[in-house]
Length: 136
Image (cartoon, rainbow, N blue to C red; front, side):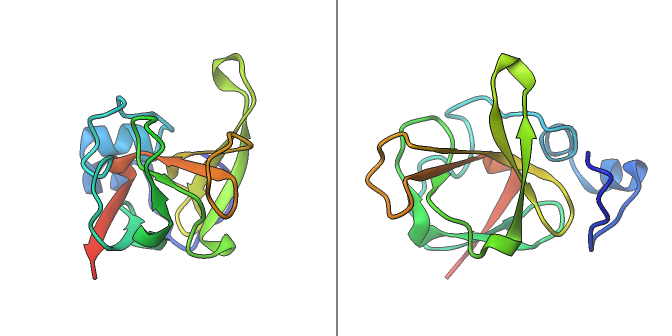
């Protein structure tokens, strides 16, 4: 994780106690859940998606769209200051990692220029396990 100071600070031991092993692997070690298995991949429930690690509100259901990629997709966060962007060159490619700006937890990646009919032409490909949905 980044050396940046976040509003929510916890030790590695505290994160491990707070999160399940699967949540820890994705949120704190920048892992990825398998495609198609996440609880929010196909949901159309209206509400707000928050960071599972710290509770920061990140995305609204009205920006969620079906991208058929295997993970929940959004075309924009609630506000630009809710997420941070980190260059990710792992796996032999250049991607933009998306993290929670409040605690630094890994959420997924953002892609653009893929041709989706969305207002931003961006796809925030976010792990279900990184979020909690609070219904409207």
